[in-house]
Length: 72
Image (cartoon, rainbow, N blue to C red; front, top):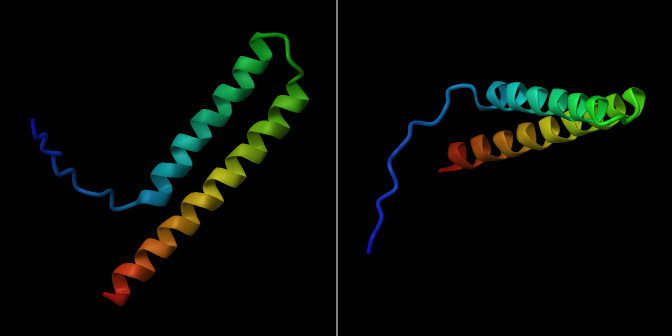
């Protein structure tokens, strides 16, 4: 059985979209930690580290992808 993958147009703002998603996930980290009795300070630090690392990774991957497309 062969499955065709639908062609989905790429986003015109991939980094912005990633920042929004990672911001929401960082908020989820803080909320889950707070609701389960974890420390708020530690949760905010972990969420901030996650947000910065994930955003940097997305920015780097996006810039590499643009460079590869320009080289073609």
